[in-house]
Length: 144
Image 1 (cartoon, rainbow, N blue to C red):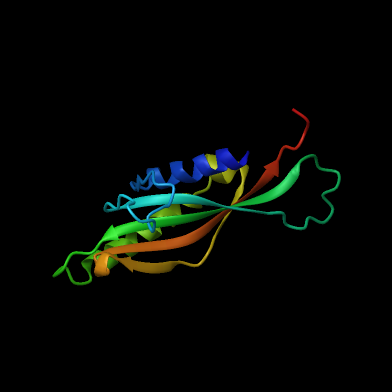
Image 2 (cartoon, rainbow, N blue to C red):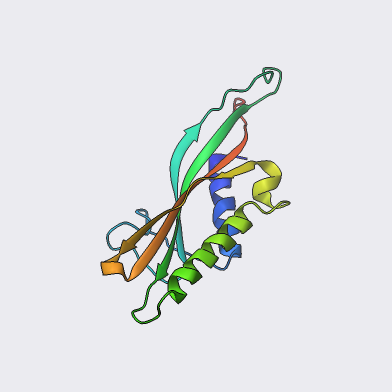
């Protein structure tokens, strides 16, 4: 697995959760980003290199690629708690799809999900839930 294939796998799992990718480089929180119902964006955050005891004899480098996942929902006046409840259901579905065993994401790597932060935009008409998704895998560092 590489950084790019891990990103592609995260996007594929969120698409499998019936969410729609927003192709804005600034994500859902960026000015001018298209913000539809059930939209998502995945932004690379960099990586970590966890300490690995007893792994000197294993080829490659263990890395933890970090991505910021944003999921957006429209809030309609008069809908009451139906829209926030739908947003929480979509969040649960997305997280279940990300950690589902036996997928290209979980077979090659290990997935860790961070805490969820919520932001309201457009005067409270749009809700964005953001969390960190980390994928740990062996990165091939052999000469090309």
